[in-house]
Length: 376
Ligand code: SF4
Ligand code: SF4
Ligand code: SF4
Image (cartoon, rainbow, N blue to C red; front, side):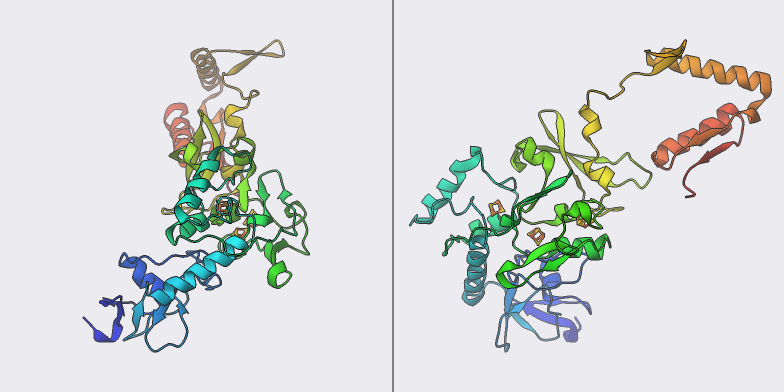
């Protein structure tokens, strides 16, 4: 082992690559360090400070997500000082907004009672839509933290757009959404506005998202660690994360092949999220992939082919419709030759569908007249 690239974490030696942070080395070796603001694929900011660790010889605790590993470092990830600091951070965070899943009973003395009380509110009308899938809640439970201060009412009312709700009362100002929008999607639609306790994620001069450069890709919703950004469908359908079945599939809107999870409740898709751990999209999606799923259960959806007769459409069975098209193509080919037929397909179809279309055109129809729209 090259001693120059060795750090010690909790008494064990680990090698590191140049450019790796303490968090990188710890995570790679299965050592847990909690994170909140840290966002893979974006520049670490260390703003929430929950990932602090103790480094021998350093006066202050350091944020592991933004501190590069350096030779000979001796690090403690769970010392009493570290735990105390994390608890204080969590206390401040859960007291900074409407985290009602954790502050139902501020005067409770026993943590167990307090926790049981929190569990009881599961069916509550006002329950936070992130309940059960919220990093802040997870950490508060893990570190057995209850709020020390009574929360301040949020100055900012919730904002609604056609796709998601921005509930500023639950925002912990971690900045993940801002980084996701600016560094990952590069839409540059949001940033931080105001100062101190009034800090808020804003679009332009604090306009609603609908009047900004936002393209509603929902990347910010995907990365929000709490219940501050939630798809509208989750709220209107009153869906809690533990009530859905997640089914992994490929988005069928275009040929990129983004990997998605369909969140299904009562046989209905109630949310779509990107699969974070895999190519080609690593969790990112466009507005159609993320929010364009209402057609699945829409009453106007065409489920059968239509045949036009005497200027009017009538429903038909697939066999009848396919036979009709096949016979017409055959007739045209026999009468005018294969090159009288052209086949137009779409970049908005999957690669597999486009492949089948060209195979059908060349092998079955016998022409090279196959094209599609991906030359915009
Ligand atoms: S955002 Fe998280 S911590 Fe806050 S109320 Fe919702 S579930 Fe609880
Ligand atoms: S939906 Fe997309 S473009 Fe709009 S603020 Fe969120 S990340 Fe930015
Ligand atoms: S909206 Fe969510 S991701 Fe954005 S700053 Fe607030 S808590 Fe963080």
